[in-house]
Amino acid sequence: MVQSDHDLLIEMGFDAERVKLAVAKTKGLQDAIEWLDKNSNTPIDELKGGASTSSSSAAPTGDDGELNADGDMAEVAGTAASLKCTDCGALFSSPERAQFHAARTEHSNFEESTEVIKPLTEEEKIVKLAELREKLAAKRAAQATADIASNKENERIRRKRTQDGEKMKEDLMKKKQIDEAAQARKDKIADEVYKAKIREKIKEDKERRARELEAEKAKRAGLPAPGFPQPVPVAAAAPVPQKAAVNHAEARLQLRLPSGGAPWVKTFAADTTLFEVAAAIEAEKGFAPKSFTATFPRKVYQQGIDFGMTLKEAGMVPSFVLIVS
Image 1 (cartoon, helix red, strand yellow):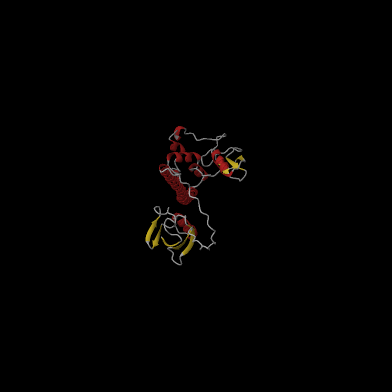
Image 2 (spheres, one colour):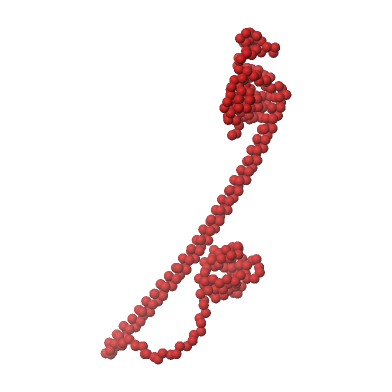
């Protein structure tokens, strides 16, 4: 628990009323210390600006009217002069100090005591002030250290959040590009199928119109309508061994990386996009390509422009050499 300036001054042994005035009349603990030091010999009534000390010229006396050697009221036997903590034996001149001690130490056993607390001498006050200044300096130094550590931690958290956000954006962009490339391949296949159907339909229509035209000509000439040509059966020929077709469904790439050394050779499907090739290089080699360069014929494939092309569309099937940069 952080102690207030009032509690610190009370703990150091200053009078509660003077501490209350010091805190009210100054700003900060250091100013309060200096105010207490400056007004240590000034009567409390004068500091309060209230009743004058001359309102009563008669010296206070005890119940028996006797004064002690210092001119103060003599203590009556059996009268409580202080409060004592029975848990630790500490003496307190006022209930406020006893309450502060109880809150700080969690001690709960107090009793009245006839022991008189001697006031601090000037030397003791100087020592107490020095101790308090040291405590204040240590408190400020600890707070400054804590602030520096807190600022560093906050900056670390901010940078981590920024890096995580950038990484998330980059991952989302890559996923989006992969999805777009996959969708583009699907759209292309669907388009080819549709075009093939259209071509077949056109062919059937042409053949039908040709048959109708021939039938019309035969009708005008008084000839029977020509029938459909029947296929002539032929003897089955002996099977001729065919040469194995070259598999052009894959592309074997030789990739020359910026790190040098032997080219990295890897086989990809012919419909793999350049973006997916770049993603594979980053995953296995830890380098994110920005472009690919073909040596012959020389051509540069840029990220964001050409990376949507498949290896087949780029003419890299069945094998090709690329410079990665």
